Image: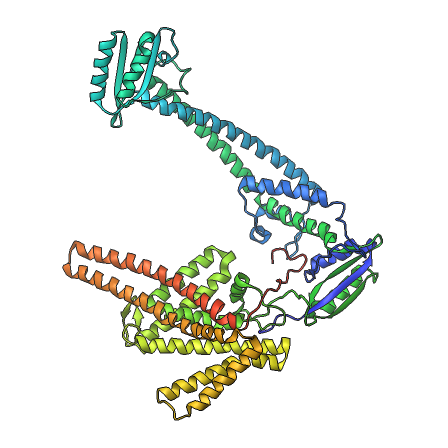
Length: 632
């Protein structure tokens, strides 16, 4: 539990004529974490198998189809019970093979691509036609109030015309007056257009520039009608025709989309099965790129969990007919070992936090179990309300059902919500109100809770120091562990003795406390150098940081009390104000619970990543990713 799975370093070598069989067996075993070979003077990197390029090409085509159909890449297990998936699968256990093979996949994908391409091309044409008609409709909507034939909006040798907006009717009157003073050879049409006035002005070409100047003075906004130049008749009569055309095009597009969706639904199982099969085959075909190679032989280097080693060697030798040589040995101290964490089922979801931060190195203690113990407690102390805990538990349970891929994350939050309910009973809180006699009242015993929070910090940080001591003992020996980690505990003992003497809690000579303090400082300088005294302040800061357990919870309680008091004031007024009070409760507590969940999660995480991990954790290991287990 505190240690990862034991790993063994493995070297497999043999003649090239058994390489393909060895690769197939390793892919099926799903136990070898391959260490990629770098080209050197002794050996080149291997070449992919002959079918790799073709497999890659077909896979690209299949994934392009999945993208076109809107199919998200997923596991075939999700479709194994569908009629379509079963049509293409030979076996219904953990291993899937396509009945029709690569040739049939290629042929089916080509046909599907042709059908899908025709639909896509048709939809593109319809979209272009719809865009043109919608643009024309917008222009016709503008002109429908002006009873002027559309063919009149064209270029003339003897006329200039202007269309656009003026701010109000007063400007139209002014326009008519100024034009009349200049010439009588004009026609002006106008209509209301959403608070503005649309005008269409036709004037003798000789007075075109003068008319343009008059319009500019009146803040005229011109509008160009580019999409109706070929239309005849009034805007109103054309508008009905255009609307009919748009409806037809939309129906046609809906029909093509339905055809595409039907195609996607019918072949979803096949495409997902094909994607998984081809990806697996391509992984095998490209595997030699990670091997060392000579003209006559290959060499594979990697790691296998110790418990799988004997069985794996036995199966490999059987597959290769004893033509390979397998060398193995336990991991050494300075080896870069891929890590496979080893935790019981209840703890396993908390590996999410290690994936999020960093994988512990092979020789380190895995902190996942400690996060399992303390993260829900910190979360529960900060949120600490029966009502909030019950609501969040139901919410996360529902989200877990909807988003199965994030089940580990929601399992963490479900456990944390359950612990929140327990602390809610301890604090006697239900949506901010004390509904039972509390063992500790967060609202009235703030300092008591502060002291408890600091005490939790002392314990948590010292657990980190003990883990750090064990890690240092493994890596650098007993004395280095004493200087680097045990010295901090001695330092805390010295500070505690001086504090207890100062507050009169115990009768002890301050000299003893000072001696512990001085000895600890000398040990720290020996273990960590001259920077150690500065890090003492960091330790105190880390411990005081646990005060947030009280502070975050207190802020949530105060906000909840304010919400309840505000709602209560409205309830007392009766009538309509009761509804206002209910809304205040729903919205107020809704916001408070979201802030509480976010704050409790982030600050609990921070206490582990910053205050706890800084005492022992280095991380930086690669996660164990066995060949053939792409989605596991």
